[in-house]
Length: 377
Image (cartoon, rainbow, N blue to C red):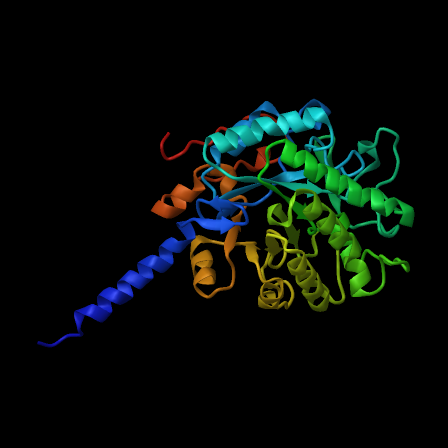
């Protein structure tokens, strides 16, 4: 007698609850299963010890956050040449491999999954980081309008030199060997850093690449190094354990592109053909506006055809709506993970988030790194 029928209301409510919960449900990523769709984004913390070995605290830091579906480590240089900031860890010596093994063991003991992000900074570096004072390398000898963290402060980056054509295969080999080292260290996979204005993106974007050889000019040529690195890493450890990060319209570190949509449509298609397990896309300016420039991210998702990891300014509400609309599969959260090691539980229960300690983002010890309490105390 009067009022709407009950059954449709119950079905609608159930559908809403199911949609809300899918962010926290397991997700199959290649050969591994993630406990949820929330990913801890890579964040540089500059706390590596002597020999650029992950500090003893790193195992605590990452294992505290093991409830994320997937952890992606701070950017980790593939060689001594690849370093661009002080105290960032490497993955090219036996000591570094052993240091990272302590981290992966600690994460796995908590039931977590962890990929390492492999990094070459290119021109975003300073001569003071080089024992012999040599210049950073880049696709072209164009100095970036950017700063980097050295000697406990931020300084302007140095003038780079252009890589010779015969040097480029060595860059590919360094990525391949670092990926092999990652598996030896117990990582579940690797993420190739192809964004944020670092070396691979410097080749991709014509604001930094003025080469006239096989690695410059056309969109195919400018994508060549990233695709060669991805192919070499996939061959070494398996495409199903290889992810790639890109930032199509990011201006970070003084980078620019005149043709981002066709450039990245091509990259997405080629990475999809390689079978890369996920594409990690920074939508907009990292840590800044999502609408910094027009771009069709749906076109990337369609062309890639596999797992799409969305990044930049995601809240739980935005992740839920994007998942419901089929825009992405996984969602990266960055800074909220710094002050909230149990971020997944806080998001799930609606608990308040703790602020990070901005004075302790880079360098130092446990303060601002491993000293944040959880809901469980």
